[in-house]
Image (tube, rainbow, N blue to C red; front, side):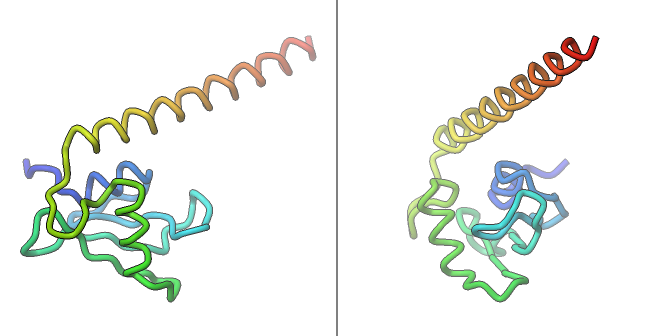
Length: 114
């Protein structure tokens, strides 16, 4: 089994669709079901990714966004794995909280209808 690349970690964090080289994720200001940005591992730099925006957006602007939110290291600096893990944990906690709230709302509706 191959080790997970930085591209795969970014796609997982953004809840995108994984592929062999990386995956597709939502573009800036697009909904969670959008897959207009392709991320692939850079062939010669393990701390960088290739970005292609299928919607005509600027891929360099998108990479700056990834750096700004801590998913890509600053140019020339390797990413700190603990930072990526902390971001992932915070993101997962938010997802779990949202799901619990939805379940509680659904239960309240269900009990009110009984």
